[in-house]
Image (cartoon, rainbow, N blue to C red; front, side, top):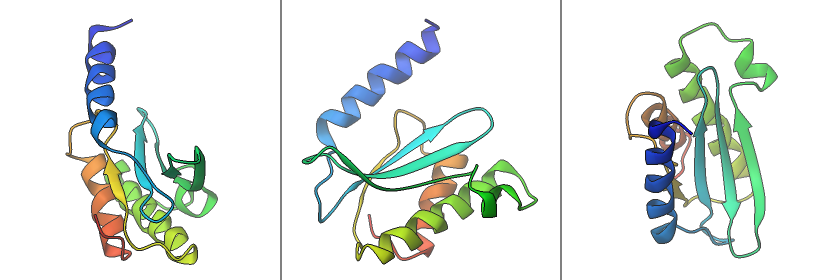
Length: 117
C-alpha cells in the first residue's frame, strides 16, 4: 500500500476511537474518492446505515459545477434526508481527510440544511 493511504488509515482509526454514532445522534461519515464524494449517516450501536448521499445521485450528477460545489449539494442532500428521519444532531467523521476543500464543503452544506455538529 501507498504510504499516504497507510497514514490516512491510521488517522481514521484514531478518529474512530473517539467518534461514534447512536440512533439519536448518528455519525456523518465522509468518503472522498478522486472523482466523487460519499456521505452516510451511521448508527454504530446497531451497525446500521440510516441514510446516504453521494455526488453520483442523479439530481447532483446532473448539475454543472466544480467538485467543491457538488460536495456542498451532497451535504444539503444528506441534511434533507436526516430531516425526513427526524434527526437534527450528528457527529461529524472526516474519515482521516483534512477538514478542507471538499470535506469542509460537505460540512458547510449539511449545516446549511439544518444539521448541527
